[in-house]
Image 1 (tube, rainbow, N blue to C red):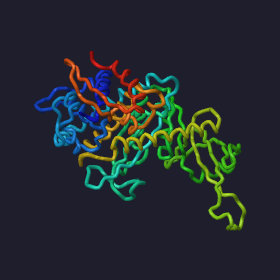
Image 2 (image 1 turned 90 degrees about the vertical axis):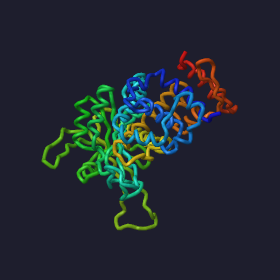
Image 3 (image 1 turned 135 degrees about the vertical axis):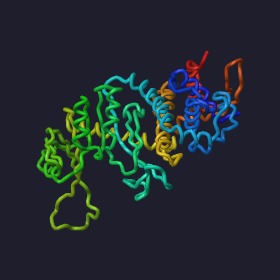
Image 4 (image 1 turned 120 degrees about the vertical axis):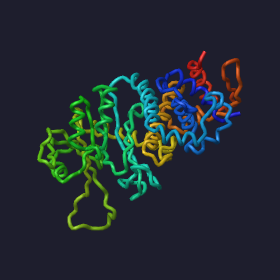
Length: 411
């Protein structure tokens, strides 16, 4: 018996899609090839194993034994992550990119991409883990991975592990160039104020991308906002716009760009407290864009950026992004790519076998629906079969999904 019966369909699917094709199968004196290690790590992460040290808990799982053959122990996985971190990063990135490319190739229209970073806190002496911006635990050491995701499909399009003291926009130019090679110029970029700067905006303009990037509310922008004309969107929200050129520390002046300003009326903390001048307190939010649509449409487009916050939360909660396995930076960078590979491959599998609404579910529900299913492993000739015992409410979802997954099974 196994409680991971859904891995049978998942393994058949990633083999049929060729997600690991090209990853070295040569052992070079090792007991396990790079492909063996990568395949085992992805299967464990999709199954919900958060830490490498828990890999031995599934050492006697009959389905994993049948699918993967002889499997490396937890200590072997630790050792290979530390010694082959860079090679494993490339292997996981290959799986992640191929999964995303399948979905993005089917998308019609402009690709809407969001950029964001997050904090991964560490409590030891991990390599390149430094103190920096860390909203979860102020003053703690950690890393600052940068992640790009599609707003429409929720697929992760790339990720870069960075030291904890990296600025928000560090390495963003390299990631954007990589995305441009894969997606072309039909892209709209959404980013928060940490990425605001002439360098990133100019890069997007050179690539032919459109963008909506939040701008820091500096005194100059506030002054221009006070002089702008506004149209009311709701009782407490007004929207205006103006043209502005920024000036760098070296005195260089940027090209004129369009700024959208959202002015919100803020309620007083104590409405009974009188003030010397009766002025309604206001907040200003700024967005720079090269879109030509209305100001309210630009604001609504930017609000879609919140999808990447949900993607990052899912990576942490469902795929253990914060459970760093090693003191080696290369191993921890490989861990980031492993999480992205498991996330994208499971989401691609869900898109192929589930109904549209269910396929947009987050990791824990996808795992409960497609992977963590009780089954008895049997063999039919050379094929591996599984007999499932599925509760009636779930059967209406899982049975059609298995029929679709059967198309990917080897003959």
